[in-house]
Image (cartoon, rainbow, N blue to C red; front, side, top):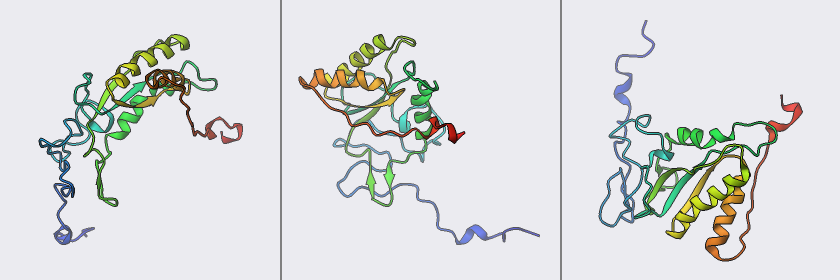
Length: 193
């Protein structure tokens, strides 16, 4: 006996090959035009999401500031952890998990990459075992982006990397800056295991 009738798929609607064009003329379906940002994720209808180099949301890997507005930057550092190491694998894991992100949000009808040129900058060089040196490397790596007017989105790494970020932002702003960090660690409770 068949589990499904032979024509079970016949009544289904065909899958949409392209998301609808944005009302403001922004990029849709991976197509770019003269008024659209030069960088963004590729059209997933042309290549499966699991192919290609692993970058955040399948964005292009770019290390030149021209045409870039937002850069996703990895900081694979966990020397400052006190309980369990492994946060150094965070940027890699976030990038892997983000490969299934879709730029079109159907409920909100928003193409999240349509109005900004976004790239994956790669990882900032760090020095395992040397937190002081790594903070200098983070500040130096972000300084280049901030000087070019690029907004960094940083993927860590342990919490100590925020110090290098703050130093870079304070230098770029020319004044002190503040940080609100929301975090929870149920994984450090003895009763959890």
